[in-house]
Amino acid sequence: MKKCVFSLLLLIFAGSFAKGGTDWRSTTERPVYLHRAMKQVTDVMVHDIYSPPVASRIYAYVAVAAYEAAHHADAGFVSFGGQLKGLSSLPKPTAGKEYSYALAAVHAMLLVAEAMVISEQKIKTEHAAMMEEIKNAGMPDEVYANSVAYGKIIAEKILLWASKDQYKETRALAKYPLSNDNRSWQPTPPAYMKAVEPNWNKLRTFVIDSAAQFKPARPTIFSTDKESRFYQEANDVYEIRLKLTNEQTEIANFWDCNPFKMNINGHVMFATKKISPGGHWINITALACKKAAAGLVQSAEAYVKVAIGLADSFISCWDEKYRSRVIRPETYINQHINKEWTPLLQTPPFPEYTSGHSVVSSASAVILTQLFGDHFSYDDSTELEFNIPVRHFNSFNEAAQEAAISRFYGGIHYMPSIINGLDEGKKIGFFIVNKLRTRRTAKPVAVRTSK
Image 1 (cartoon, rainbow, N blue to C red):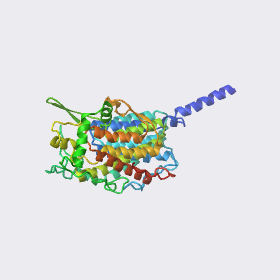
Image 2: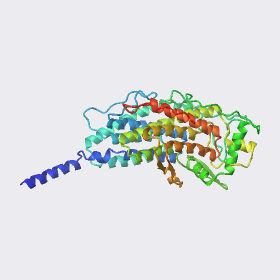
Image 3: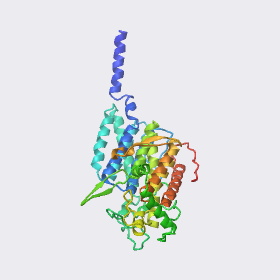
Image 4: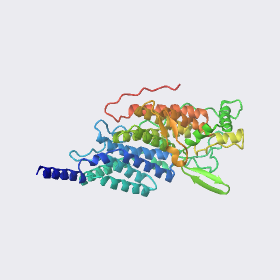
């Protein structure tokens, strides 16, 4: 008799799990779906060929949406409501209702992504697949419905906030007027593309006070005099191209991150697509989260801090680019040193100063170091899908330094742009980690001066 009762209890207990008992959380309340969703966003942005600034904006809003839904899973984390420019308080989960915050976060992230990308159907397909997978993990119908509804509310609030950041207004502004003087940026071969996002500094920032808050030192004064500093800096770019080592070439190609490279083969022109600089650092964030076994909320925190750092870094960097309008090495060298010279990498279609890679990499390194530590080593496999081998780094700062110098090896930046860009990004990174609060108890991070 006792055996029958025991067997009956086991069946009832097992049935409760099958119908949606507590066991569903061990399957769904993990960061795996968050990582998959972010990778899908990246893949679609590569497909749609978003410029680096535009990609950074999308990353910021999808990451904020995910974090705002996810952070309720841990009472030690706080909302960004009232912290980010223009973002008021956000709706909280209804007391007494049960939620899957992983589901709500993924749903919010992908709803925002669908509204912001061209290939929304690609997002919708993966979105539907993940939702079905989560639902089939044994989650109770009521929990599923609560979570979907909450994710939708967060997404709607984030999209309303995003609609007021001046992005749409910049679409209607005048195009960049080319200057006739010989010191300003000009379109470069092979596609001679128009200037990318000349009005990006008009966008609302996320954390920094304004686009010009971290305005870098002025660029070197233009000159064609062979004894001038500007000529020597251009000549340094010219000469390094002639004696690049295999290692330097590998570094340049690894960090190229050109979303749209135009290739010419005889009379045939075709484009190749790759991840953006911001996308590369978002993927590094994913690698760090996985290596550190970061949970759902910690992973959402890492994504959102890095994404916000990227967005503000591009606004700051682009503000300087179109203020100084510095001529690219390729143009200057062809006109004043050697008309046959070509850079290793294809020159991007916007002014030279400061180096975007330097700014965003330095800012990202500061933020990731604050989250994961000074000596966090990792293997960066980001570029494997583009047939570029894995590189190992002993710290995020080491990676940022390499990303920056890669632009010198690639022949697309003078050294001051790299050095001052690193400094600009570092200041932005420290400003963000000290001003943006994700945890109820957090210590300020000391700003380190450049050596």
